[in-house]
Image (cartoon, rainbow, N blue to C red; front, top):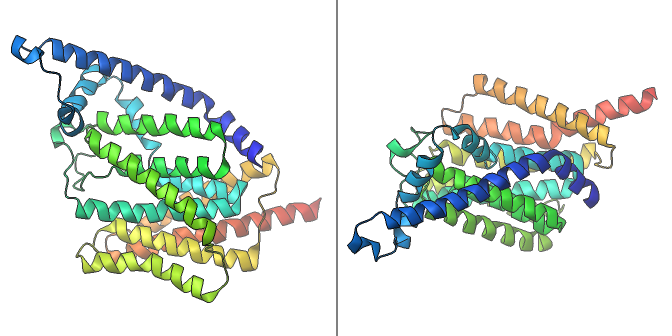
Length: 346
């Protein structure tokens, strides 16, 4: 199974990863050179002083330097790289693991990602640290959320660190480092975060992955003990109550996190009892599962955006709950029906 996972990632991600690695290396080289040039071009009195680290980490200098070298010709590249840290994409990768590779690990990486998302939400609420000025942003100019920690940096770090720790494959670690580095640089280049906010995302993501790895050794959400079920339900719903108490319950991100988590968990409980699909399938079956799963969830998201547009807490929560339960239960049920039908015909 581990070898199959490595091949699965290698075949589909090798060229893209090499592309990211080369551009990340290029960015580091050019950024170092530009910083040196900037220091040399200052007045004689200033030239004796190196550029303060605080200006690099907390200021806009690095953003301006990156944009000076690469904007606007390479905007498309950085926008593509930053998408690798998108929470929807990472949740989709977790679903692929759940559908095609390992049910248990697929469940766990989803829980770790979304509990990490809870943490990110409250850190942004409690640490009031604005994003860089709007005039520096290449995309998301209307985003009014705070910037610490970077959600893209945190989520990508959580996913790839947890995956590497769980599957214990060096290649996954190398792939993860390349993707996470590229995502972080892209967030700075696009003017969406200060470098320190990205570094904070890295630190929080590593912490979430490490703690999650330790916790799941002793706590299994699929345990049928009712006290465990109750504890896990409280862990999902308590942050929602805390958000309402803090007066931030109206922010849609909070309701989406809680809704998806609850729907996914309830869906896995029902799947374990009634469906019991297996991930021991052929590569062709895995490809079909990915196509079917992506088509079903994509259609569902479009349908829900019309019927439940997510303009308030309740509709956003219900929409996310339906999405989570669909990924965990409805899609596996379709797999079982299709595959059993084919087996009966053969």
